[in-house]
Length: 309
Ligand code: NDP
Image (cartoon, rainbow, N blue to C red; front, side, top):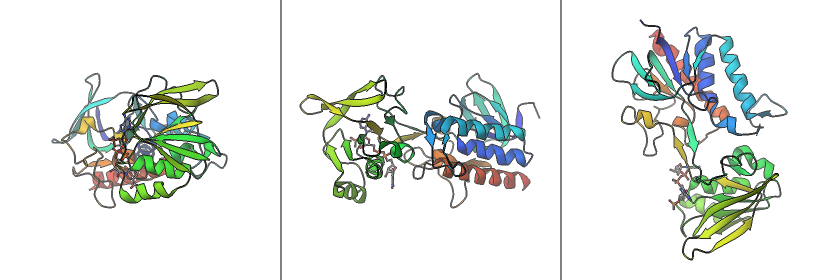
């Protein structure tokens, strides 16, 4: 076998990928992690993480990810900062092609490429992440105690974020581009019943206004009249969905209609024997660092079992 052959290749490097690396390296499987363009994943764009057990004072997202990586290196995990463009899952060993046309082969693959929250595409929104812009109410809601926030979107994610935020915020406005919601009936009803939630219908956020201290207002355009109004806010939460990072897997592995990898039953097995998936790339529901890490452990243990058998 060539230098580029591994027993296990892990694609992706958030909490799921790092945990899979930790377990497979401790099992002497000498994993290679192809860590993508954003090593560490979504948590590297957050600030305080207060809901990852083991850190009584909380920990900064980037530090948590850096610690996880260091822990895996201690057991011999190898990393390459490169983006996977293609995989061949029809032949054994599996073949992985990266952006520079480098190829690697592996007896088993762990897919941990995560999902990316969708953003509106406004010029300053990414630089304001952590300064008033967020796409994760569970992660950041706590920082908006007694504050006014706006949530964009009309699906289940937006309803869930808005409802969760009412635990902290004094007022939550949901800005939706139409006058009917896409969210499921029970989620809609829960939001409608909540006194702290108010809807801003037929409206699109067209500008985010910020000072040094962060976001202080947004400009919202009415889609029927074209009128633009300024609304004061302490925070803007994106609730317009997540996109799983599975473009390179299209047609090669079973995914659901949104592109999330389908895993079988209680195990992280995909429909291709020897290929396992963990973290947000196969989870549109929990999407937490701790649940991703847990599924990374499961994927590693399944890969180990597969290789033994
Ligand atoms: P959806 O695609 O269902 O909804 C996205 C919402 O965002 C829509 O209302 C859409 O508007 C709006 N939107 C999309 N792009 C833009 C944009 N550029 N500007 C303004 N608004 C925009 O995504 P969700 O993440 O809400 O849900 C995805 C899946 O996950 C669903 O199947 C959902 O049921 C599931 N889910 C389940 C949960 C639960 O059961 N607890 C929680 C969260 C998600 P429009 O309606 O006009 O298209």
